[in-house]
Length: 158
Image 1 (spheres, one colour):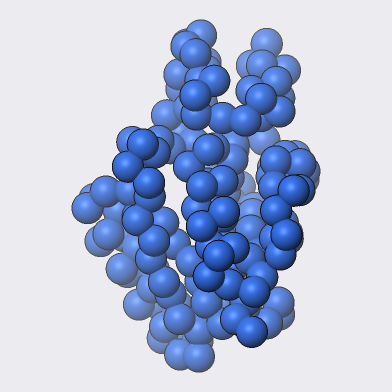
Image 2: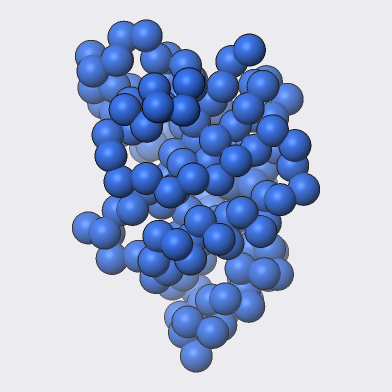
């Protein structure tokens, strides 16, 4: 049995993130969506809100658990018996940064592998940052987010 950790800030969780989780459930016994505190990024939603949103959106997927964290990712993975860190690649520009993270994690925890999944083509341009910006400017984000998330963004942004 292989457990995977899919880390991110998920501020907010998008249809692209959900697609990655759905695909991961076909490959791993358990997928832990690890919501990073990431206070340095000044998220729109606090950690508890992001965990709750992701939990609601992913609640119908068997083998998926959503947990917030504020520790080293490899320590979190070990604590939750995960031997794989799952990362998504949207574009070539993501690769260099992700490659550095994977190298650091491998040095910190050689027993934990990083696996990359390419994003589905229809979500390759999608990021939480872009969705927030479009939302702030009054654009339609209904194709990119679950309805529960859209409602929460509207509450936050007014």
